[in-house]
Length: 120
Length: 107
Image (cartoon, rainbow over all chains, first blue to last red; front, side, top):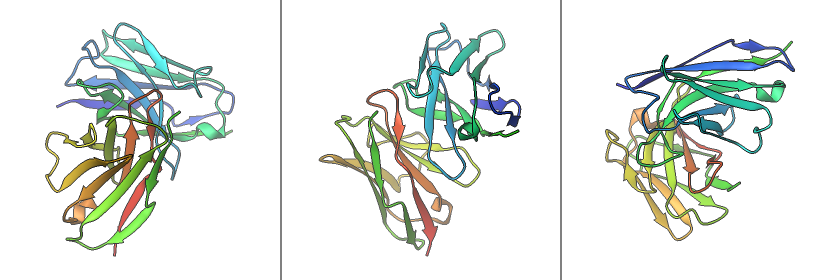
């Protein structure tokens, strides 16, 4: 059974860095799948942040590209998100997810999500 | 970015009802469309991809189809556990984008 679990601080100060890690079990981040971060502001819709392949290749949303970094640790079977210079608009539930094996950008396994609040 | 317009934003229905949700893309997406269910406080769950392919383990009362430029999602007979929000998502082009969601409530 594939499981993903997000972890990281639930509160980040404005202008600070949001850092989250997604631990994967039941699957290998070194597989052919891509691994993704998404977010959902409270009461709103879903937004794709970006993705990473075990080779280190990344793709980011154009709206966040200047502030985001995603990395992978194949040895620990996890991948991470850094979002820099955060504001209140970055307050959201952050999800990690796995792309479907048969097609990119369609997500079959998700973490439970973690709420990150940006506030002083 | 491709804009996904989903309707209705909410609906009320009874157990056993047939429910249909529609999504329209701002440009051609060639059946690269998925539907997700999200229960309150939970992560989205993939139900349908490639417009009409049911994800493994998803009950057959859920279905998706394309009709011209519209994509529709249908629950043939609403069950108590189906009261949730539903989102469409295109993955034809990056960034992948989602509709604003449809909340299915109990009448």
